[in-house]
Length: 173
Image 1 (cartoon, rainbow, N blue to C red):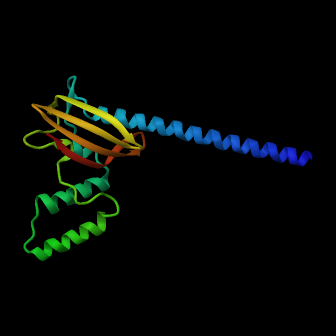
Image 2 (image 1 turned 180 degrees about the horizontal axis):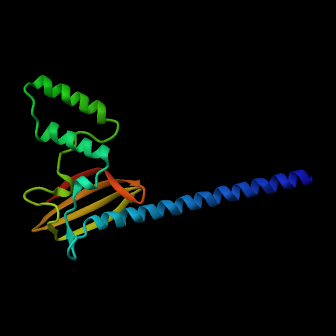
Image 3 (image 1 turned 60 degrees about the vertical axis):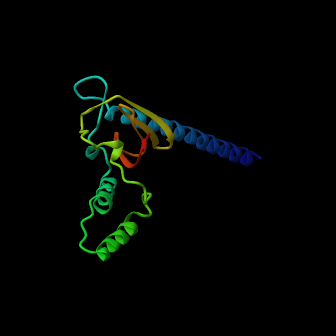
């Protein structure tokens, strides 16, 4: 009987430790999620004044995503193929390399809608960030004059910071 009682106590103690571990993991996850939102907000802060400014995307992307983004632009926005066969072969390599990692076939927009003369550090009218799930966020970037881009951003934690591991940008008309 004593053996059963001690065994039962050990099981209850182990179950309680498991429950505490799960609660701790959830808290850490919530802390990381809010840290991700703060990080996203910080990248849009103007360096020399108050307000929102365009960030340097090349400093924010995970290496893998930067490579994917550059290959996407090279293949679909600025293709330089001498023949159709070269292009078809390059698309096949691209799909095999990235198809299981990132969604393919999306319309190509520059991250956060940059372009059209807008440069890193240029002022923005507003930026709104909201959490979607896990490390995914919605980032609305308002350039002013009714130009707003919606961005679905996925972050990956790295040491005490984050990197963007995917961004899907669409123009809101």
